Image 1 (cartoon, rainbow, N blue to C red):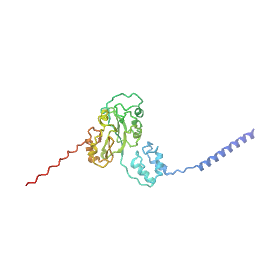
Image 2: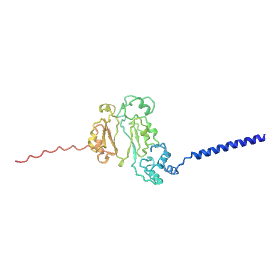
Image 3: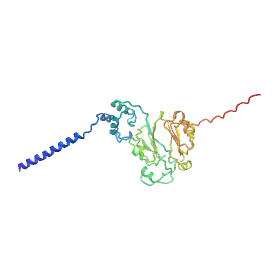
Image 4: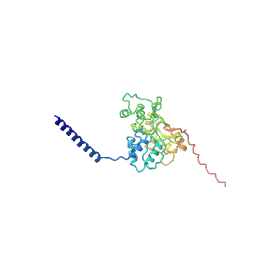
Length: 293
């Protein structure tokens, strides 16, 4: 009995030793070296794991920065410039400061501007509603007002406005992580520079239908009249994309933003902290005086 127990112990010990040897060999054979700087970079990141940098989490972003030769295409929107400076210092690289960004809702189809034609009684999800119908106001391009963007925001930067029915972005809380951009099935959100003194001008409409049809569903729809393009002769900052106007973030808001807002006959152009202005009428050329004989 004693010898049987001893043999069992020896057998188990041998099996354990062989298993340990195999595990040791495998660990050595397939060991993957990880740069210790990854941990250093990860430590200075905000640990938001929001995906706003284009990577699934802060760890993946840290790995990408350590493996990069420059940081031009890499940016942490939550940590901002200060975090990127810290990352650059760890890696011995240079980083160019970027202006703060904010999410912009390119739709003004409020309950007043786009009154309900039907009542939606389905799943409370923009993705689901988008696949089923145009929207309660009839615009197939407008906000569905079912707050998917609000629920996905990790920074409490979005709230639904009970009066307008539209989500409202809190500029002070928005980190431009892009979660709202990704979740919206109608691609209504856009990340744009906050601008000097928080001044921004953009077309709050995505309707590419003909003007009469667009206006039928929303009073402030872009009708493709081309007036804003004529007002802003800048070589591409304001363009027509089919029947829809688009104002680039590079537009000169300070000097010409007010004229852009004031040029729109349907108020489709949104001016944040920008007052609408009208261009003065062009003076007719005076007739040359006849020479006295």
